[in-house]
Image 1: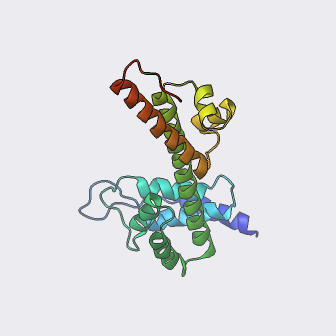
Image 2: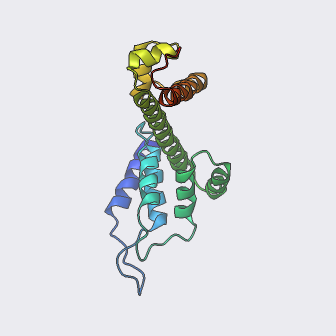
Image 3: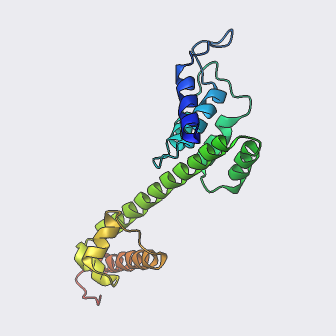
Amino acid sequence: MTARHTAAKRQHQIEAEPERPSPPGCAGSGRDWARTIEAAAALAERGDESLPAGRLLLAAAESGVADGETDPHGWRPALARLARAPWSPEADRVLDAMTRPADAGVRRAVDEFRQVCREREADRERAAVATEVRRVVAVSGLSQRAFAARIGTSASRLSSYVHGHVVPSAAMMLRIKREERQLRRLREVDRALPGVPRAC
């Protein structure tokens, strides 16, 4: 039997198992992290490029804590810490220590989780840069074409920054911020000396 068939069989067993009752004295049915990790490991064994194991663990780590949750090994806080800071070496070390004695499926699931968290953070950073470029262009009072000319690029290239299709280089971001400061100073001069011509 291939590893793929073994993983599929294990996933079917997990899905077929009845829900465990809540521990005595607990209302509701909290997450059993041992089963969550098992399910993620089974998904990781499939080698799906959509990273379902990583997405399962991210959703679990960021879900609310329900009464009766069982997490004796501390998976939730370890995963949640990496989700908040995907490149944190401290969070990485904690997860490395937890997965070292685990089987290959669990290690692959956690690797998928890291990848999903880092891709999400990269998307957020890309969106934040695009938002900042849009803000600077908007407050400049210039058209995109005029602003692009002032920073030495084309209108189409600036548009790709504004819409988040391309992330500007560090040097270009410095140029954009420098132009923002220059235009702000020019507006201040205009307010202080109305009617006085100025050179751009």
